Length: 180
Image 1 (cartoon, one colour):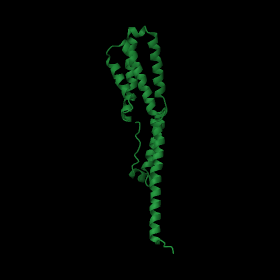
Image 2: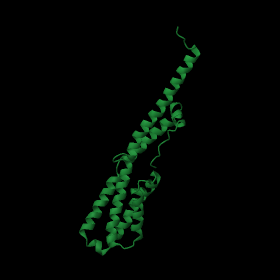
Image 3: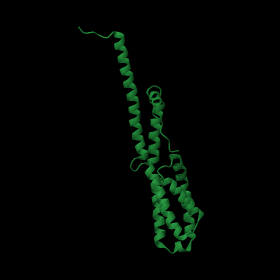
Image 4: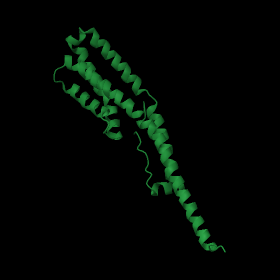
């Protein structure tokens, strides 16, 4: 003879299984979506790579500038700015601030180089400066910033939604940092 569970116990087990499924689905769904948006930030040729390339161009300009300008404070400011952009451990907010300063630092160094007689006589460095400026301009015109910000905003809005978004937040899914 088979013993059956009381109906109340069966309902309780069913409710626990449904609750587990909803919680697991919420967390895994938001986690997967967050990974996709994070790929726009940290993936190959993502926003962090673009900022790193801009920092590398800043470092390259410093190398050229140091051949013509000894111990120049503007070159040092550019070097510090570029170092933050190429440092993988720097937070996104710090990189945003330095990326905003990079163009002004490049312009200051360029102005000093153009006034330096040794630079005016060096065709190779003049061409290199021109190439670096073009590269910096192309990198600053990339759509990576807007793509990441749009995806992060949409993710954060879904995470703030009542219901499943609330459950996901309560279970440890955090919002994404914006590049602002």
